[in-house]
Image (cartoon, rainbow, N blue to C red):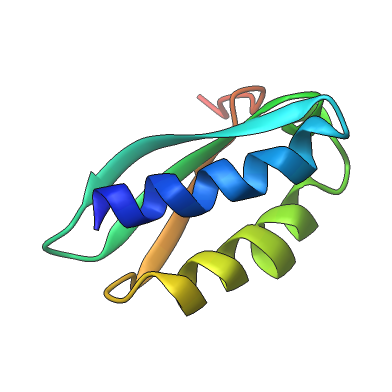
Length: 82
């Protein structure tokens, strides 16, 4: 599963680079089918980052990589409420 995810992410990176951004695989729980991703570069702080993840990245990954049940997104600039 990991190699399939990395291959799809490499394809997606091409589009994100056009906007000075990127995407990284942060964690993978194959047993649970949970993938954790992080948008990087300009995409990390973009107001449309949630749309990019939900309508773009998640759709492509779920269509092309069997076994994914959930995709989580790390928000590096999110402030803690603690």
